[in-house]
Image 1 (cartoon, helix red, strand yellow):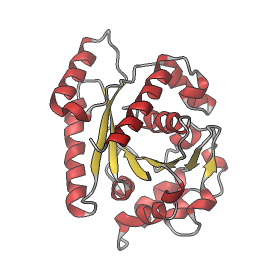
Image 2 (cartoon, helix red, strand yellow):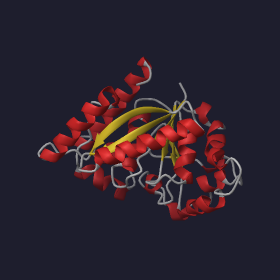
Image 3 (cartoon, helix red, strand yellow):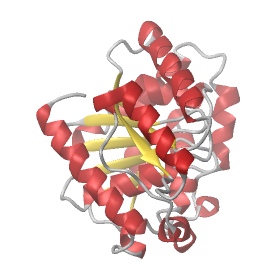
Length: 258
């Protein structure tokens, strides 16, 4: 199995990068080979895996503009089986440089096709906007995994994102599917969080993973130590939730698409 998953949500602050880093790490620790592509100029997935974005000589930006091959830019992480194609602020330049080029939505797809056979899974951490970088990720992906924060505007943001996915299907990637929806930052003591969870499950049913990611201090602290939560504090509720999500993700993959 070689599958490309974009982790995307047009809304910021929903746990998207936390999900990309911790799910990719948990799947790697299950014995799969995984590549995480950081497509956010903030480089949070890169720094969250212990790599200083400011110290990088080559990044995904250099791969996109064609000056280096992906295998020259990827970096092994402290998680066995997980590599990252890192990003830093240079990637913001791609938004400008690619916007008027022919086939601008397919640059990442061409890049990924050169390395995808080496991995069981390729995850793409998208920026929180539907710009050219996210469009590249959705064009390259087989499926989209959507983290949804359990808060007031969750359904509105989710509806907009699914509309964007439909437009990508109609224009550049007809095979793009929804891998699943992950409820994040869940606090069972919060009535609104419970209501949002019930509402999302009522509307999207089997597309919503059973594993729910709680609000968790260990997950929030882990990036400052340059490691995923599963290495920072494997016993924390957040880490265990991502382990459960990884197992559900893999079990689902063996049974077929959602």
